[in-house]
Amino acid sequence: MARFCLRHWSTLVPLIAALVLAVSWGRDLNAAAVILVSAALTGAVLSAVHHAEVVAHKVGEPLGALVLAVAVTVIEVGLIVTLMLSSGDKAASLARDTVFAAVMITCNGIVGLSLLVGALRRRVAVFNAEGTGAALATVATLATLCLVLPTFTTSEPGPVFSGAQLAFAAVAALVLYGVFVMVQTVRHPGDFLPVEGGPAATVDVEHEEPPTGGRALASLGLLLLALVGVVGLAKTVSPNIEAAIASAGLPQSAVGVVIALLVLLPEALAAVRSARRGRVQISMNLALGSAMASIGLTIPAIALASIWIEGPLMLGLGATQMVLLALTVVVGALTVVPGRATLLQGCVHLVLFSAFLFLAVSP
Image (cartoon, rainbow, N blue to C red; front, top):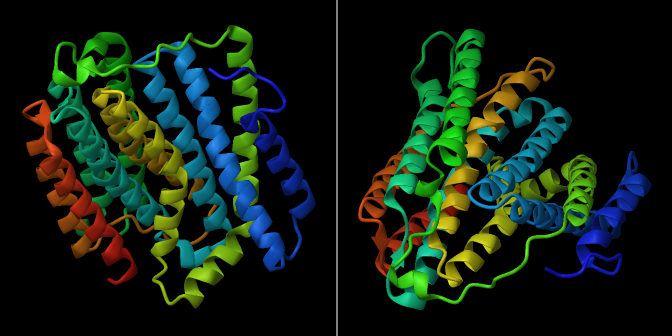
């Protein structure tokens, strides 16, 4: 681990983001200011995930992957809520679009890229089928409960839950996510550790000493500061982001895709790094754990926030989105069952991810 000092980028960026937030808050931004705020926002996201990685390294696996997933979800919820508050009825489907985009990015983009990198390095990417299968099953259940069922319920017109249905879905999502966390960290943590003895286990891994307690606490403080910067800067620049997407002729759902791509970029980099080191299981933990947290934590948080946010909360997916989700679950199950994958499986997931991106901008 790099030495903790003020010259380190991850230390400076949260401070710079806080300064930019203080200067830009409540002001109308010109083009140069938008670029500056956007750069500070991107840097705050990257530094937040970096400090989450430091804390995760301190607590160890598989709890470390959970820390990363929760940190990413906090950023995602903050971005969604701030945009919903500033956009009104135009953002009625923002939570659905962002969560669905996060599922497609993690289950196809990150998983596919990790399998491809792992297979190219050692011909076969090896992972634990028990833990990965349990994670995929949980993601599929959460996605169906929170994103598919609203399209077919009849208590309210449109792809929305009634108040009671939304409360049930939120509580069920929290319970299911909590049970998974208990299984991953307490009951069966071995199912989520890298497989020993497979081809990928021979890859050289960087043996880094865990950070000291002082550095972990400092990273925790900087993580909180970075999260404040992310939420505040997102609210400041959100009108400009929406205006840019509208002027480009893209659908409103593209806002959710942009949020998910921004939030999950550091997660993708961390997963690819693990895959290059032969720790494909950690990559799968990061990808599926982020998908699970994105649904299991974001939907309950948005459901709670909807008490104060005016307007409908559209959660139900459209026909095209449901086809992509169903295909993702089927392909993911076929990938996970053997406990090993070649570059073919990685390419299949990446093609699905490309189809999602194309249809998001050209529905």
